[in-house]
Image 1 (cartoon, rainbow, N blue to C red):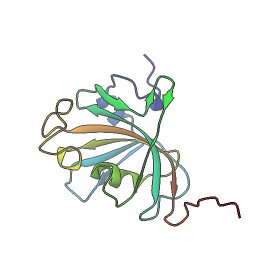
Image 2 (image 1 turned 90 degrees about the vertical axis):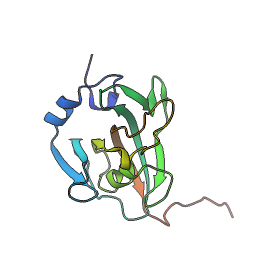
Image 3 (image 1 turned 180 degrees about the horizontal axis):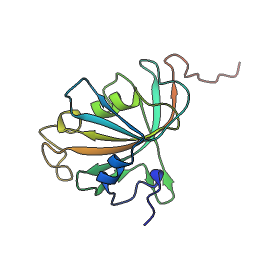
Image 4 (image 1 turned 135 degrees about the vertical axis):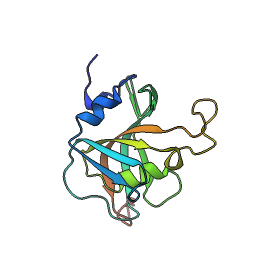
Length: 151
């Protein structure tokens, strides 16, 4: 099996991902336990506050087994959300705010930054530490999302 960074394989070796990371950053304050392991550096600037971000993702259990992904065979549907909004997990919010376009990072997320005490029955158990592979496509600053009108 190939371990191409953007393939988001069905089963991954998380220890190897941690060991081969270019760098690691703790997000959400010291002692949060929320770690970002950069696998591929991006370029350009990190998104401004309240930007809309567009990224590919895959979710994994701590065992390295994939739960879901935005890239499934021929289907490719990136996720888009607004920084500071309510529609994305806190771990995704904090990670995306610190990512540059083209960056691929793995996020080790304690349950409080992911699905919490409830989990997502039946697929995600309560208090589950999750891993997320995120690939930043682009970010649009607030107020720059234009709608085309023909006069």
